Amino acid sequence: MQAVVLIFGRGRSTEVLLLVLFGAETLLFTLLFGFLLFLPLLLVSLLLLQRQRHHPPCEILHALLVRQGGLGLGVHLPHLGRQRILLG
Image (cartoon, rainbow, N blue to C red; front, side):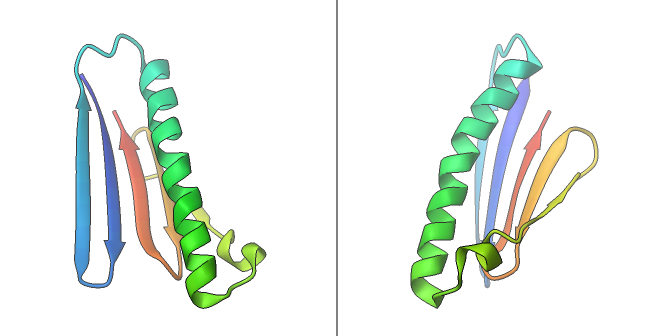
């Protein structure tokens, strides 16, 4: 069983979306599904942020990628809050 967890934090409100994939045969399928789900959300967030605060794209795309332990990908956007995907 593989799980994809998306955590969005902005100020005091935090929305957590937990999606558990039952019967995922391979980790490749989970990784592909996770990235296909995550990338559009990240791009929409960046576009909304650019419209709200009028930051240039180079400043918005200054994202810090960190490993969260195990197999994971974390993206920290300084002006938007925290977004993170944990796989596995």
